[in-house]
Image 1 (cartoon, rainbow, N blue to C red):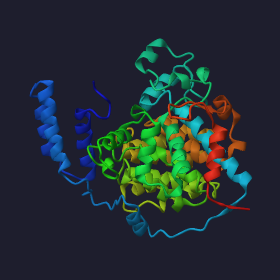
Image 2: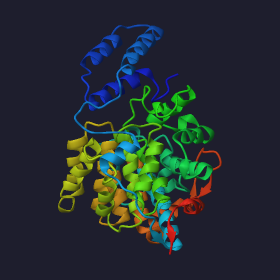
Image 3: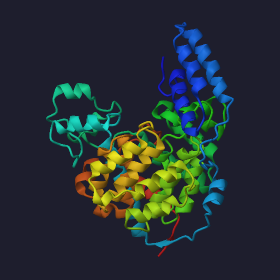
Image 4: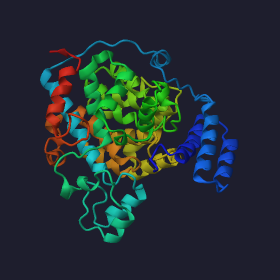
Length: 445
């Protein structure tokens, strides 16, 4: 049985790409791998030889040789970014409740918008949705009016994609992008703000079936089951260590740290090191900080600028965000902006951290404070559509608050979420928001 993201051939292919991005010369490894694949060996013999080849990768430290400064440990990030302690800001309880509920609702709606077309390319989405005149996107995706031939060519996401179509929505269906805020809520409720990375994985193992995780998270989960402890869980045979998985786990840390981007980032780093290194870690700390900053700022550029202060400036991630900030986003069409991002970052896998973070950042800037424009633009940008819709929706929802989010996007959720997480199925989003408020740190006005 082949299990996605754990298959030896899949991992070697992605390890070659990951090592190349880290600056290694992988020509000899690639040649050896190609020769092995052409030997026509029995399945058992092939696996043995593949394991031997991967063992050679394991002997090379997972460090960067590409002239970028990219530490993974929090104390090094603090020193490099010259981060200093921040005061606890004052907010009214009504303000915090509205903003945190806005984050939960905004994240859910953005995630559901992108869910049906996850894994479909940008060009495929244009072809598919142009057929029923729903491109550009301005509402939840519908199947009505799409020819059967296109539905066969571009099937909806098998993970509840059909349930996320406009005509089928009854609540927020299960999604890993929504599971992680609930898991992290549980971590804080169980262990408090002194939680450890080991307690994060223990929470996963007690609440989440392993196959509800993907890419780096699935590898880290299996590594821990094999007795490997964090942070080694992030690097042992984990070619997805700089992919988007940690980035989609950022929200809870920001929600419980209103106006405290440094606090949010530190929690996010503690979580991310379970499964990621370097730019994979930066994705989570950047967006945790952005969500925390969304309580204090009413425009996305201020949020992004503050969040960037917690990211090592010499990293590929920081370079990507600065590239976006330099684009004339307000003076060109959204398609032109997306074309520029694809030209610059199109070499990354569609669920890598860097390209998706750049797209999320660009969509936030393009929105000019409009929730609908933000989530629609990021989903139309392609790549990891549901994850990006969720992150954009979370930041915009937190910045705007629940009271002003458009009913068009929020009412179809019916305030309910489904999940396979133990103790969370059929939760009310309003209840999750109340539990989040209960553990948020701020000074009451």
